[in-house]
Image (cartoon, rainbow, N blue to C red; front, side, top):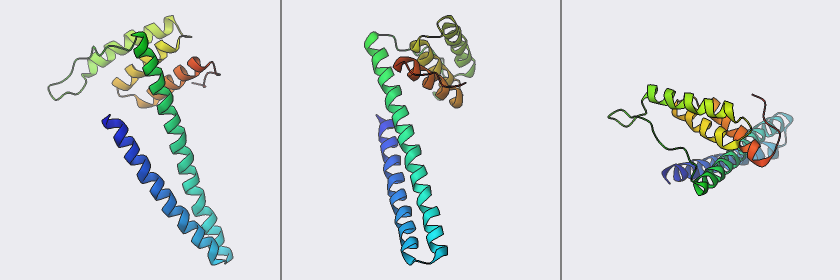
Length: 151
């Protein structure tokens, strides 16, 4: 729940910022000189890119959460078998051990979105966020029957 609240607060702050920047872009365009119009258009592009990025990330999170809910309903969510340090951080060797197991599962069933989901969790636990995201994108694509994103 804490992660959802953090995400919502961050998204709200970003939207507020995009509106603020967008209003400045409109003000520049309303000034009417060629230079301020050009700057105004350039300033308006930034919030549009930001909104697109926020939208794509929100869709990704919603789809990943839907897969997690489906796995939970099946009783197939990955079990947290990781050793932790006294401070609560994941032990790196433990994460690597679980990762090797998840990778082998995925290689044995490369067309099963469930194995890709569990591999994404293992990548995340091993602190490899870019690969975790790619594995989750693959799980989502396999689940939805869409073309698989390039690796």
